[in-house]
Image (tube, rainbow, N blue to C red):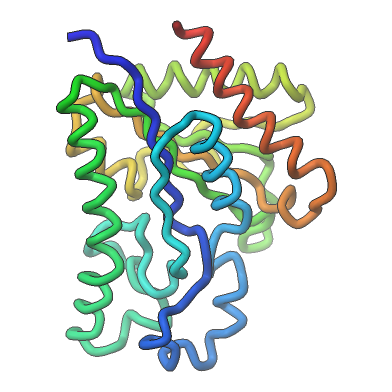
Length: 237
């Protein structure tokens, strides 16, 4: 069966909102909540623009990952944060059932339904990363995270990187940086659920320095990301 491509955009760390019921858990963690640990600045804006440009469904969460991290698997040591990992088990379970599982299940169900209709789903998960972590400067503007063993993901990211550099030669675009595309995350989980010829899962990571600088560079970078992806898909047609 020849599958037609179907884009789907997600943003797991789109905001730093804490539902009022859990506000008291974050007393003393206000600064952490406002930091890059609380959310991914700029990721939601990019996700919305990708979804609009590609006419793709968009799934987002604006609840802080410090409540529960939607990009971590159940059992991962960082699924819960400093503010929530030591709360009563029943309350952690409530958070899981009300804020984690509904989001993850909606996305997984939507992908499964698209594949059942004969589509090849290209899932782009929008993220951003802090310019400096533990004193080390991150040496990239954009990261494209994927599984090198999956040829569809590898080839799309190669084309996307080439087009990004053509749009803006000064951009440092790196593959599987600043994280490995096969480490624990939502796309890694979904690869285990769906075959490689039907599901491509790619995490887009943008350096937050571009968000914080603002001005004209930030909108231009977002434009480059979208238009380079368009061209990469055209090249593959």
